[in-house]
Image (cartoon, rainbow, N blue to C red; front, side, top):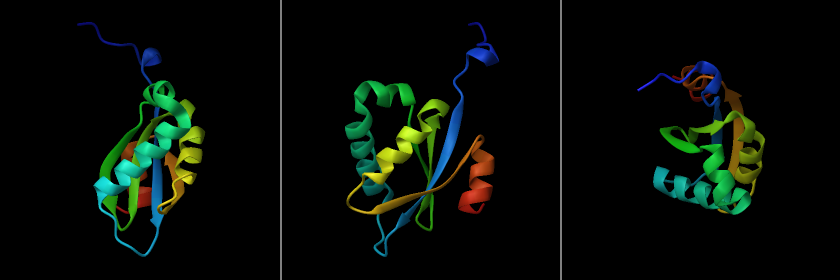
Length: 106
């Protein structure tokens, strides 16, 4: 197999979020609500193009979502539309390591 050139690779961003609620939610509940909200806002085709992956890094009501760099703003809007709990985006990073250190705390 040939190696993909760096210019042809997808550029990802890592979106750090925080759940603003006193109740403790499991990661599966959060993932399901986020997927529903993003699918409803973007649709299946845009969801696939955005290459969204909700990572299992979840500590102290904070987590990380991997998304294509062109769909960061649309994903933020979709997260605002969740009704069961309030999701606030903390920040966006270009690497997973920096997102963990800067926003999640380790």
